[in-house]
Image (cartoon, rainbow, N blue to C red):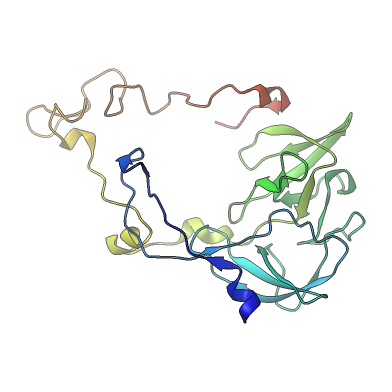
Length: 248
């Protein structure tokens, strides 16, 4: 079990704070947890592995599959849908198109669902890592592969970047009912007070006689910035890789 323990480390969560100052409200507390070292790079190429166990990960929405490689090493990966304990997985250039196998994007047929997508070669998966999510390979063009993301956005990704075949497990995660406020606290979510219920000095929505509405043309944040419909996505240089915008 020593090798399995090495896949879990302790760490101090900042929980919405930077140098002790709150930078993201309503975060704090929560149950103590160990961080699981997940293999997002899938860089153990050409060596077969079997799923030894399926484990819960308190740090993310997706479950984990613990792989036992032919050389005895163990690693965690995000659990793909449709795989079970005992199934064999492979990360290789010519791996079969099967859920859980990792390949370069140019080796994956158009129309295939993928997850754990690399944005930069060798950096490891940075996109499509939420439980139940998948992107679809929709086209190929001049060294790029077009991926339709879970948001509906179509984005160009370099064809040499790696991805994992299939959809992530846990599609029913949004149907879970927490049932009590205490479970929110265990997750590290602190109470939220509506703006209209606050004092006018504390929130732009506050004040008024009795129960009153927002009382302004558009809702605002506690700092007076527009919200609820205001676009906040920054235009980055990577915007040139977006073929089609997100569904709204």
